[in-house]
Length: 432
Length: 152
Image (cartoon, rainbow over all chains, first blue to last red; front, side, top):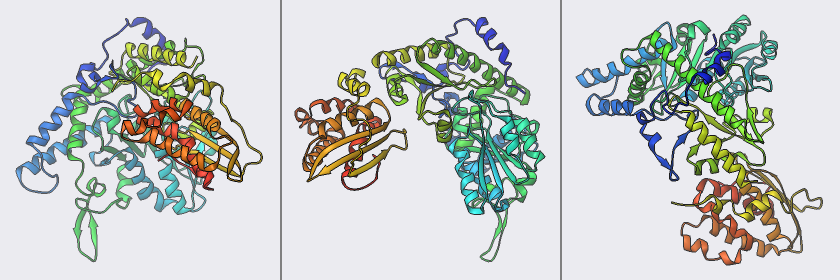
């Protein structure tokens, strides 16, 4: 299911007046009102980390000041209140992902930890010498290195499916690289460097046909697209909460119940045990088995408040899907406008032109290194990422050492795109 | 902290970036080192032909931002034909100039630096200091007989 109808993209631009109010009001995000180098901030680095709505930080502070205690421990009132608040959010995330069971939702300290958990607790015991882990050339280092560690420990091999020059997956190459030795298939839902939206459902079906288990890296999809893990058929799906306007230090691992139940714990500690003696320990049921130690309680509660901000009060699956679809469509319009402005600048190349694409604009400017571009844009109050985006294999594939990347969130508007384009022109003039 | 882009991208920097001096490979190199900034991807190779304690030839090659490439280009001009001891002394002055916390200490030798003084714009941009410094650290590694360098 596409996130938006691509053919409609240009129509949408025509229909839209020159919007200066964004889908999320900038005034809801105090940090967006910060001045940078004497300029109003045009924050275009949300793919690295999104800014936080005041409503969520305020709700988190209220929780910490009035309801806080450790969770899943004491019988005292505050501990119960904190546990209820924490567990409420597990239910919300279940709805966001459309998981079948709330015990399929594990809170981790981040997307990276979620992937490492699966690599170590699921893949490593499973892999035999000669087995294969299939990735794509689009992957972030955090969806490469954990698999390499598991492969090195077991004698398995990591291989990558190719992409086309426009950033789309070469689905024929992907299919050709699937075989009976393929035990794990891991790929990003949305490329952080190019914005490509991968056909997750089709890829998952193909992987399942050869008996492989599928992990989907949703670091970039969470805040921009409707996700349905059951519809996709994903075995594992991971989220990065700080990229979803939520707090840092919280990640989500979704795993099918039967897979999570069969896996050994990733870390040992408090909360994850049923009983402990020096001879033997028995482990707690899901999800506690994978949440050793005191979790990021305030962070998880902050996630809940962030979801409430995004979808409004009393949201449910339907209204969540409507809202994130609206967000994805809005960002697509802003992106198309931005690309159209940048395309007029001679010597500028945009990388990534997939049919299905999210709000990422990766670009280079002739004779200006991305780092110089990043500094000059910053001087104009425009915050972009300049570098390899933790995707060195992809940069090699594209034949560039680095790119500049503008990433779009629901609080960005067309004016931000104008600011970007005029700052790029200023950079060009310096190096003319 | 107020600064201007022209402080960073001075004419001297832009000139060396567009017309690099001392760029290319050195066939009779006695010392070679490659420096790499893993964070930003800047990469510089420095080659030296040292005879009787003197740098007869110096070349750089690599890819990186304007600050890094200009710094490397200016460095080859400054070190060409210099005694190794003078080159090492200049390395120390550059370190003080780029990284000393105390502004007046950093500026002490500015009149002796010639074109290299143009690198001073990075002092206001901590993340870019390593761009300017990478060629110098790579030179230092090369002269010490090491093959790789980092500016960490």
